[in-house]
Length: 621
Image (tube, rainbow, N blue to C red; front, side, top):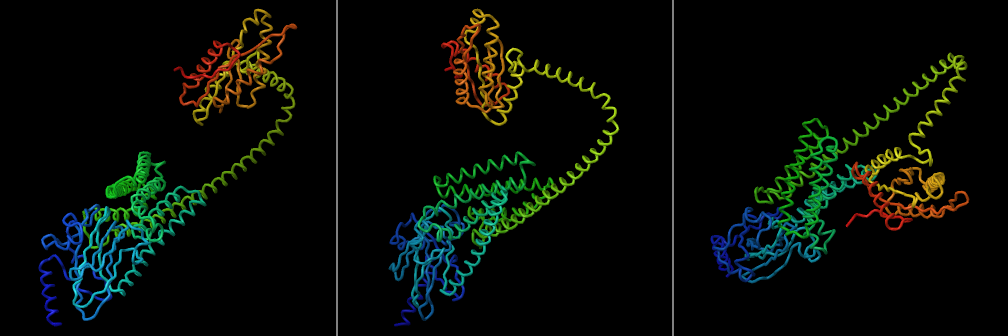
């Protein structure tokens, strides 16, 4: 009976082999994992939605699975089928491994003699803690009885890469592969983390933007690599599969963002090429926008956009580096060499993800190699730049010390020469000292009178109109440069003509002098300016003062003057003023004049609305 059973199974296997719908896999060497790619067949899920329907599909519906079909992003759901036969005389343990930790949902059905004996659901759309075996990849363990055909159906549903690196291993070979993979990935992640943290510490201690951007780039790439290998989902957010879905579309543009800012600093584009500087900053802005839009875009579309963005940005940065290198920029040459590895790796990986290139290696291998080369070499570029800056700073300090020494020696020599000259001229100076002192005193008095006549109003003792105009232009330029507000106050004595008519012009002059003195006393800051603008009008400039502050000063001045005890020849003179206020940040050269006109309009309004009040300028409706 055993022989008849064996013959029956052989015929069944032979028929299955010629039917092409199922393939017999050799068990393989105990110490080496068997890659299952040559024995995989697929059928679109739209032909069969469940396991019962897919088992009924005949050989015509199954085709050999080739990389051109599934090694792309956003492939429609499909079934994969393969069979395993144990020709040995004893039972063996086997481990099925799917080394793509970014499959959204993989439904595995283990079928023996037409019956489903086991069913598991895997994928990164489920919490990591629900995995049957703790591993970055999707693992299924089973036993192969001798002379029994085991058929596996695998339904793949994913918006990301549908690559299926399936392998069959013995427990020993699987353990060796896990150790090798963990060592390789651990070394890579450890090196990236060490470089990123080291750069971050240097950035914090030195305040260097270059190291800050480089640290951000390396740490973003480190988290991206950990996510691609499944370590982030396993150790950082195992309970948040939704976060796992959006981290890659988020981290890729963030890495691009820091890479562009780092490129701007390392190539010193601010000093050498302003169009390139703007291009880097526009690209950084687009990267931030792309990262923020990641949760709202279709996952497949987001990955395609990110892949194309990586290709464009890496090419752009390489072109910019080459242009600067040809111009003789030292760091640009080193940057070009460092970035070339990343450029080649990203192009090959992107082409594999887009289905343009098929290579017998993992999609991430070219990118990881190029990335590691680029980051390590870029760290060397930063070290060279830091050393160059240190040498330049030291050289500058030495030159400054030499220049200070020369200045000190020149000053000492001048002092000695001056001492000898003083000794020779002392006798002559003594003879002319009195005449020179008299002449200088007369000249000083004349200069003071001229200065006062040029800038001070002779009646009130405050600055005149000419001094006001010069100061207005100067404060306007300062407000424009510092982006600080400037306020103008226009003051007019209410019914001043009646004072002159009733008490005489001497009483009016006395009122003007008293008001001017009061205005000077009310202005506390050295930068404030009060001037006689003309007749009974005064103007006040308040630098670095907004509308609210100007109103407070104006109201205090109005109240103080209204309470002044002004009298002339034992007659009390009631005296009030009206004030117009205008304040804003100067943006153009003509704005100070505009500010003056606005304050004058506000003063006119205060006069029309009853006098003895403060009005601020407001835009007409």
